[in-house]
Every structure is written in C-alpha cells, then in structure tokens.
Image (cartoon, rainbow, N blue to C red; front, top):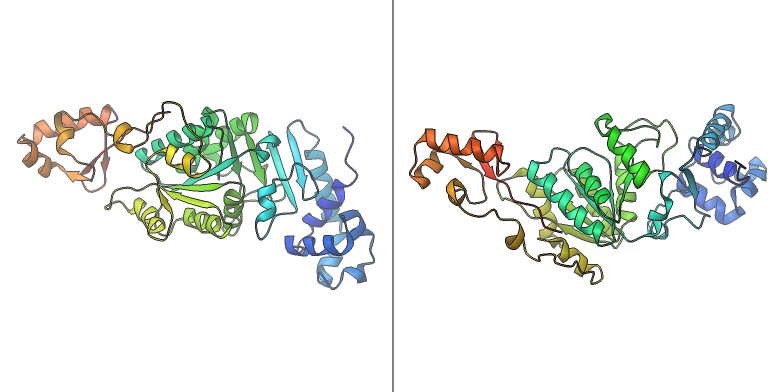
Amino acid sequence: MTRDPGLAGWLQLSLTPGIGAAAVRTMLRQFGLPHSILQRKRSELAPYVGAEVLAALDSSRVMEATEQALRWVEAPGHHVVTLADEAYPRLLLEIADPPPVLYGAGSLELLQRPALAVVGSRNATAQGERNAESFAHALSDSGFTIVSGLALGIDAAAHRGGLAGRGSTIAVLGTGIDVVYPRRNAQLAGEIAARGLVLSEFPLGTAPAATNFPRRNRLISGLAQGCLVVEAALASGSLITARAAAEQGREVFALPGSIHSPLSKGCHALIKTGAKLVESAEDILTELGGFQLSGFATTTADVQSPQPGGLLQYMGHDPVDVDSLCTRAGLSAEQVASELLRLELDGRITALPGGLYQRLEKGPRR
C-alpha cells in the first residue's frame, strides 16, 4: 500500500504530547497543512506551543508513534481521517473542539449518514436494555446510524439494535482504537468493526482514563442529529453527553420511567429542562425530519404493555412487594410466589433489591 505523504505530518502533530487540538487548528490557520507547519523554524512555532512541546515534536518517541500509526492504517479496514479529508464528518466541524485526527476501523461511509446517539446507564435494568435495543433497531431500520460509546448496559444494547437494522452503528471509544474497554464487549467491538464503524480520537495504545470519557461523549453527540437518553441516574455520564448535545444545537430526547427508579431520575431531570419526552421511535423520527416507519405503533400503550391477566393485572408499573400483591389479588403468599416465579421465567417481571418486583414492558415493535 502506498502511504499518503501528508498523513505523517498530521500524525506527528497530533501525537506530540502537549499539542492540543486547539493549538493544531491555530497553526493550521497560520501556516497551512501540517507539512508546512513542520517545515517552519521551531522559533516560528514558539508562540503557539511551549519549549518542552517543541523539543518533543521531533523526538524519537513521537516519530516511533507516528510510524506505528502509519503501519496500523495499512491494515484492511483501518483508516485515519484528518480535518482536511472529505471523509471527515461534517457535523463534527460544527462542534467547539473537533479533533484534528480520527482513527477508524470499519465503514467510513457511516460518518456521512444521518445519525442518532443512544446512551444511558452502564448498570441498566433488563427493561432498559430492551428499550434501548428496540429503539435503536427501529431507528436503524429507518436509516439512522446509531452512535454510542461501547459501554456496558444501554450503550451495548444500542449497538446491538443498530447492527440489527440497516443503518448500522458507530462505537466511539474513550481509549485507543486498538484497546477494547470494557473487555466484556470485545466480541461486540469486533462485530461493529466488521459491520459498522469503531472510532477514536486517541492515539493507539491509549488506556482507559476517567478524563477520556467526557471527551468521547462530545464526539458521540457531535456525530449525531440528536441524542436519546435511556435510563440515567442524576450523576450519570450520559447526562454529560446530553448537555454536550444541547450545547452543540442537537435535539435531546429522554425516555421516561418509574418515579421510584434512580435510573429514571436523570431522564426526568432532562425532560424538566427541555428534553423531549419520547414514548416511541416514531416520536424521534417525526422530530428529526418526518421519517416514517411502516406499521410502527405510535404510543407506548399500543406496543409496550403486556396483556393483562393473572397477577400482572395487580402489579401496575411501579415496584411492588409480595404482601401488597397478596392483598390486591386475594392470594396466599405461596400462590403469589409461585406466580411471580413463572412470570420471571417468562421474562414478564424482574426481581429488584428489597424483595420488590416490577413488571417488564415489551419494547416497541418495528
């Protein structure tokens, strides 16, 4: 494979410790493309970066990292996209801090398609994961690429739904693109690289660090026309993504839940501050440009509620204990326990801490 002579310059600048994205963009405006920057006397670059950074610019460490990246991109399906490339996602050019370089594994064409971010709690409920996967599947079938962060819980469910539809999915990492985190999602990451796109702004080999994930979140929202939050506590990182989306002028959507669930409080807080409450994927499609799904039901009541019958008709939608069910249904504790076990095995309810049970809803049909 013939190497792009200009790519080495982009990599050298981006891989030099201490040269942030803002400094790179400033020098690009002042001097032109990276090869022109690197040809300048180091004294001419001094107003933009410190002395230590200038010393590192031509260091063996930076040159070795540049060579490693150039070798990595030679593999099939590997890409490095720069601000100067046609493949660079146009929506990212609208955000406050677009990265000069993106590493990608998979299908770059997904960067040019309409996209929706779907994010939420890592410690999601079974129902939350089902909702995320069902919404993502329906939205993907409508033509949206689903963008999320490859975390456990809602993110992983959103990616699975995206892969199941025709729009596919983009996983934005808070690590180097060659580092899968969490390891439990290694197989999913491989499926996304094969049938979607894995993306990172971080250099190869970058390990997970707390400071990386808020930066990743701004790219998740920045790549998309809107952001859907499914289950989030008040301190959830998903709210960072939602705030970034709002600051970037994107639409923010939130799925409501039980008033008793800590994982609903973040979504409810978003709704109180202006996020759009959604009960179906069609709510989002209509808001983002009138997309329609053939045969797609428009209300949660139409598509999510189990048919009443047996103990379910006494459960409502909030967590409930066995004693309350005995009183409501007029059954013994043994009868209620037996019925609860059957419903749990059927996937109709879930057991919660504190001896509580909650009815599970069916996700929206496509």
